[in-house]
Structures are given as C-alpha cells and as structure tokens.
Image (cartoon, rainbow, N blue to C red; front, side):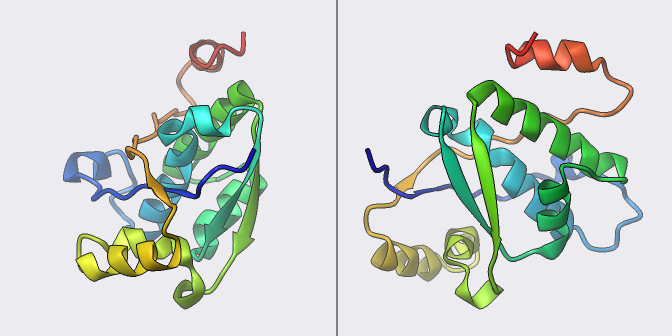
Length: 155
C-alpha cells in the first residue's frame, strides 16, 4: 500500500547546539544532519520494514549518512543512532542529492521564516502528512554500544 509523503519541521533549540563542536563557525551542516537523523525517530511506524528516500541538498550531511561514518565525534553521535534505529525497524534508506531550489523537502523547513513555504509545499504535495519532529538521541564513542543497541531492541 502506498503511503502519503511525510514531513516535519522544527527550530533546533539552543540547548541542542551545546552538544556540537563549538569551533564550527556555521551550524547549517550539523542542523541538516540532525534533520536527516531525526527521520526514523519521528516516524518509526511508517518506516517499519520499508525502504524510503531522503532528498538531501546538503553534501556534508549526505556524505556522512551515505558512508555511515563521520570522523567528527559530534557528527558520528548522529550517524550511529540513526543506523541502529533503522536496523531495529528493518528499514533501508536511499539518499538522493537534489539542488536546494529543487528540493521539495526544504519547503517545510522554511516555515518559521515564511509560512508561505508550507502553503507552497501543501499546494505541490496536498496529501502530505505532518509528523512530530523527534530529535535523535546522541551517541558518543565513550558510551556503551551494546547498551545503546539494546535500547533499540537489537540485542
């Protein structure tokens, strides 16, 4: 059965930024990675046992999720729980890079700056369903991986 397109949007709270490398001058890359990592936590039931497509216009976020690896600890802290959650859901992502201006999934993310963005999105994808944006848990290398995997029902 076909499912309607899903979307979520959120403004990352300042307290969440504290978990990321403060030497980064711009947080757009990490914000894009957070949005990607949030998907299986925001709509797990809809992803259970399914493949799905991420449309991504940020090459930094795309790279760390396609490779399933990040050398920066703050980025790895997002990638690891993402893939553990997907494994627990028996779900497979497909990543597709698209230019920002052609990225439909970008429109809802602009809602806080322009409500018209969401209206434009709903005009293009009228059957889209909003889901609650759930921030992904962060997993740092010094944490117990077996314990984390058990929280996802993997061990």
